[in-house]
Image 1 (cartoon, each protein chain N blue to C red):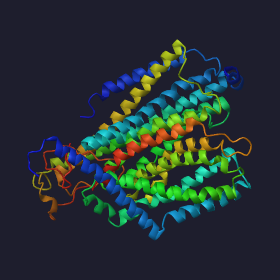
Image 2: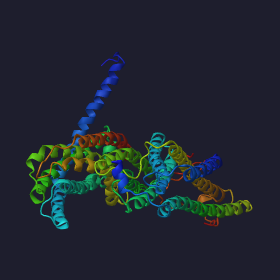
Image 3: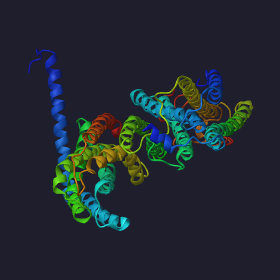
Image 4: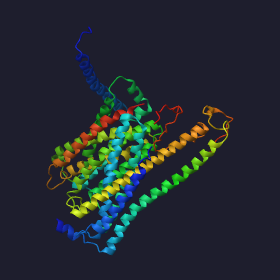
Length: 245
Length: 81
Length: 256
């Protein structure tokens, strides 16, 4: 290539190269994460088992055979959140303990790629978790038919999962290189999860009733969406600062 | 709705309500006073440290004094903590 | 350096607090519904507003820290968040007292301000343990700033979410700041101003004390050499390093 090109071209080329770089990096990281999880099965089976066991505990704790409405929505969300925290705790442990951070930092890639990849990983874990937990919940505790509730439920869970994934990734990155990582992670995450619980539980509780199930109110879905957006942007901007050194 | 709220909260008579109001203001006062106490402790520690530093600086030069490269000098007596 | 203006600030605080107390007890009319108990409003709500603004301010100061990497911003962020946490505790306690007087219960879920504060308190209560759990000072400041920004953004969102969730349960009963009649509005504004000045004074006081500590450490190092100054034990608070004519410490951290 001669050097006689217009000045804008190299900049555009560089920008395009970086943009391709981000998604390619994300793809590579995501593939690695999912492969590791498939081979070691450290997080997802544990999370799913925890959720099912928690339902059993709830049965004995509440002394009920079936729940609906607010109670059902609450039990489902609390269980999902605590199972998610198990996943959050393990999210960066391998990177921190086995030098994954250093390797990543040396590579000439956009650092935000790690954030996106980890969020997508955690999201994938949550989806698989829910594939197990929601039917288990319907089987063990839910006193209302699941079928008609499913579309609203899935929409709410999707929005809620995104929020949990974003916040979980940010908190995991903060907590993993501290001395009390297993304790600080949940302590930091739970207050940040509260708006997700508010939106999520209020959204699905009218769905999970025997008598007249209705659709989730748009206001709660909007709350969840707004929360996801705001914290997605903030976490994306701040993640780099956690990776330095 | 206002009528319903009014019906639910009777205006407390002064001698009962006074205790709560006083309690709230005492809480504020107490918080500020606790902070004053903490600062007082710090100030006494600063005074003590400055006294030590003053006596350190009045020592004749050469025994401890201004020598900055003496950090690994084993002969130098350890300064008071 | 930090203490400049502290005297003027504290004098204006004293004046503002005295005036506001006078207004509260001698000028503001008794409210029809709650009677004398309503006077707590002039303590509880300013505490709440100042604490909230303090938390958000802590986040803004943290942004400055991440942008400039100047440890002084981290120190300011730390002090402001610390002070806001104390004011938040004050908010919870005074709110609880008000709830007891109004409802007979020490805690009510129907008051969104109180509930939001509980959540915010639980979040910021992890700030100190997070800092303490990271030993390297530069990383501690950096992670703390990330936390402060996240939490600072969380505060308003949390308020909105909680307010949405309680609106459909009970009508708000512990009083709101809208539709205040004239004399009450004036009293409220003056009380708010007094609380804000108190917050500013206490923060400045704290920053000055920390800086004085740093100056003493620097003086001790200069007088008795590097080994004399006891190394700071592991701590959650950021350390200010006083500018001296000595070369900066081995860590290479830029002095003030």
